[in-house]
Image (cartoon, rainbow, N blue to C red):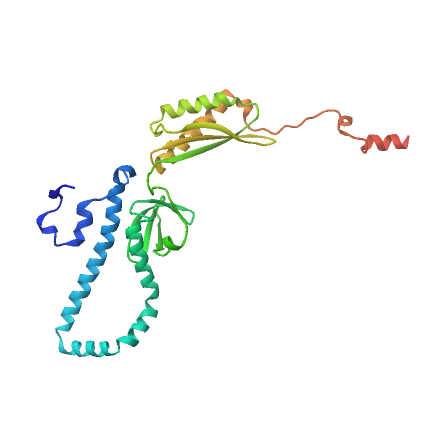
Length: 277
């Protein structure tokens, strides 16, 4: 970190530190800004603590300059035992959130700009405060959750150590489709796509049912957003490939139509007629 990153007057203003030192952007790969996001998460929490402490101390010093307030303060100190019990019960939830904030800031199960899946919603961590976390959902909504949620409940963190991700595309086709041809087409599509990072590519038959065969295309991308776009691209092109080259291999329902006697067993109408004779 260059020493010129901070102006001389910024050292005494702790609320300027995080934005001056580093600011992760969603356009940078998580591998490039992982350390920056770790530091920023800790600095933002420390910044909020320092600002709150400075405001509290400043307000206390101002109020203590009045004799009336000093007398009230002396009376409060005399009853501090009872007051502490009352305040402890009243602020139990707030204190648990504050302790959760310390735990999140320094153990970091989540960081700013992390990609999470929480309550079935995909989003990025936009803000971490003393009491809650704000997730920016993919459709611009905001999901607000208490800090204790991330200590007590499971969630998915897609950028915990790396933003790289695997994506899947499923195709359901007829048994007559040549799998090798689809596999070759998948490799061609991925090689031509700038969204593929070159790590993983494959096509497997993952299930066979009475009417269709399930094919799973596996691919890799640098981050979750790119992986989603790559999956859509591969899905569209594979469907077009099957339609153009193997239209007879699209899913179909088979039915055999023939003489009625062919499907009647000994308990059918033929047997009943023979009994009448």
